[in-house]
Image 1 (tube, protein in one colour):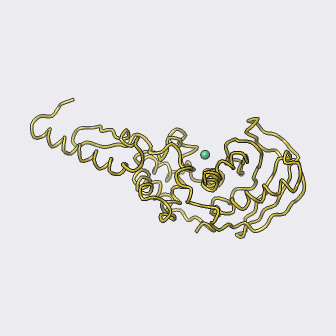
Image 2: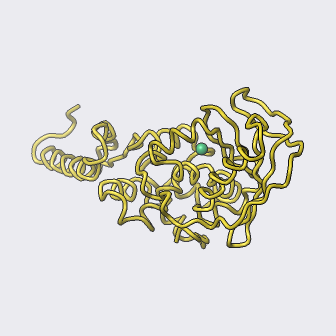
Image 3: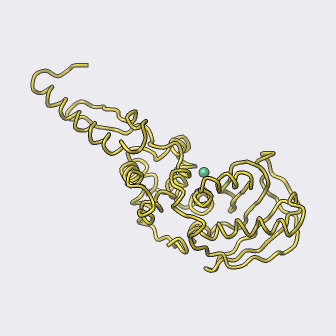
Length: 279
Ligand SMILES: [Zn+2]
């Protein structure tokens, strides 16, 4: 649409090219889809560039090195406390189920503790303990602020998504094996524990909502499509990455995150987290 003529039009086009260049330069390393992210609106008095599409589909698989199995864990001890009736959610039946779970009391070195409840399908306490110990050590790598509301952990067989609600982390070990293969078990646990420990306080807070409004777009389409449920969990992992793991991630990832969600990062930076043993 040509509504400008003469020099004014050329100035407009030059300004337009400049803005598009800046945005494409920021996102050129992010993904090929970045060029779809640019829309220009409001031609007068100056073009305003809006990023309409998030740069990623999801965030847990963007970098496997944000937390690894070689990072320190706050895991301190595990004690088998027998079997007991527990109500657990099982994604294989997509429902709540009451089982006679194998129970383990796990303590961390910073005063936190959690009860790991293992589905009796693992048959023996010894086999259940292997699983409980494995995931307790991994959960122990998470920052204390993410573990503080994790009162229980559920462990089932099956290849089903993890969960982070109900003051709990839900684990299906078939899915966990896939995450281990891809090096993102720890990153996924950060996402789930963000739900467990941060959503209630922060996901609807005025500061967070204000940051959502000010930022160009969401960091992922998963966050965009579930803005009240997934945005904080999708973001917190990358906040940890750009703030405390810059030496482990690519500069392209860092630039994309800081250009896409600067206000969310500022909001998270303004909180006083206890990141032990992560940092
Ligand atoms: Zn989630």
